Amino acid sequence: MKTLLETDAHLLRASEKTNVALTFTVPEAVSLLRITYFYAPKTLDGEAARPAIEACLRRDAGEFYPEYPDWTHYLPLKNLVTLSLDAPDGFRGCAHRQADRQVHILSRAEASPGFLPGELAAGEWKLVLNVHALVTEFCDCHIKIEAEVDGCGD
Image (spheres, rainbow, N blue to C red):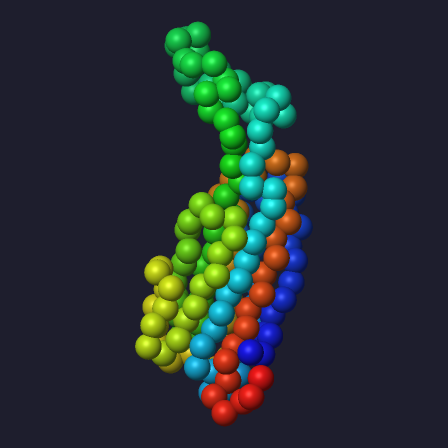
């Protein structure tokens, strides 16, 4: 496998509800792409989560706030960072899942759920980290994209 991109993204609280685009180049004759990514931390638990939970309950429940369960009922709070993928010729899929560790495969004949199989066009591709929720002060992501190149022993 040939590594096309391997990078880290350090996301801060201000990154919430944004998209972080990463570009990479796919060479000619690629038969398979493997995208591996993970992020941490996944959760915010215990007393550290209490102010956020109580603020949301007060804001959203209004006068009914006293009727809601104790704040611990809503633990743990979770970060959510997902990914989308675009080829030079358009959208190739997305993985909007809760897991903080994922591996996705794309090839001519098959692809992981949420992605489209088909020719893997040479050129500039874009992987987008979709930062849906960041409940921690920061979140570190690691992304690795590898390619199987036809006729290459790598």
